Length: 283
Ligand SMILES: Nc1ncnc2c1ncn2[C@@H]1O[C@H](COP(=O)(O)OP(=O)(O)O)[C@@H](O)[C@H]1O
Ligand SMILES: [Mg+2]
Image (cartoon, rainbow, N blue to C red):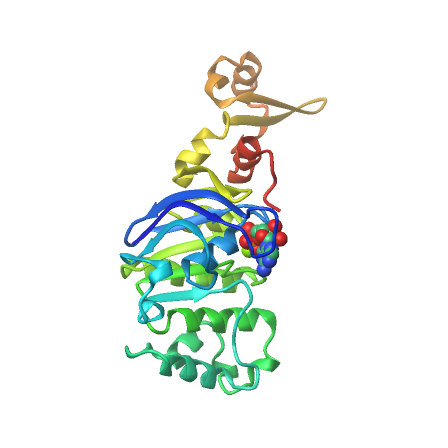
C-alpha cells in the first residue's frame, strides 16, 4: 500500500537536509509506526506521503501511484490527521463534518454516531472555535475517517488526550485495521507504538535506524533482570539476570526460608532500546 525508496527532502531555503534517505514498505491492514523524538522528520515525511510537501527526491508510492503524480481522487482514498487540527472555527462540529463530507464522491459514515463514540454528542452544534484542544483532536480524527479511506495517516492522533479518550481512539484505529485499512502512525509515545503497531521504525535525523515488530525490538533491548527484596533485620534489595536466577544462591535460600518480600522482572522498554540504539531520548 505504501512503498518509499531513498526518500530525501530539504525545506526550500534551508541548508540542512531533513529527510536523509528513508526506505520502507507498509502492507495492507498493517499499522506501521514512526517512533522518534521531536525534530526527527516524522511530520515532514507524513506531509510528503500525503502530497502536502512537494519537491522530494526518491520515490513514494501510495496505493500504486507515485505521490508527485497523484491523481485527483487521491484524497478520496486517504485519510489524514495532521499535527495541528485543520477545522473551521466559525462552523459547528457537524457543519465541519458535513462540509468535508461534501468534498468526497463516496458516501460518508454516520457523523452523529462517530461524534457519540468520541463523546462529542453534547457539542455537535457547538462552534469549533469554542472547542478545547482535545475536542478538536477528536473531531479531527472523525474528519479523517468519515469517508472510509483505504490508507490512514495519523500524526500524533492522541496527543494531549486523557487516557480514557486515548483508549477510544486506539480502539478505533484497531477497528480500522480490522476492516482492512492501512495505517501509518506517527508518534513519540512508545506505549502507543507498542500497543498498536505491527512494526515500528525508529526515526532519528531523517532516517530509519531500526525497523521491527515491537516484540522483536523488546527482545533486542538487553537482558531482562529480576529485582527482589527481603527482610533480614532491615529491608534488603538485590538484582540478578533472569537467565541465571536459578544459580543465585542467595535467591534460592530466601525462597526456601520464605523471606522474599517482592519479586519483579525489569522489562527494558522501547524507550530503553531507543536510547541504546540511537543515543537519543524520545522526549
Ligand atoms: N516549514 C519548515 N521549514 C523549515 N524547516 C522545517 C519546517 N518544518 C519543520 N522543519 C524542520 O524539519 C525538522 C523535522 O521536523 P518535523 O518533521 O516536524 O519533525 P517531527 O515531526 O519528527 O518532530 C526539524 O528540524 C524542523 O525544525
Ligand atoms: Mg511531528
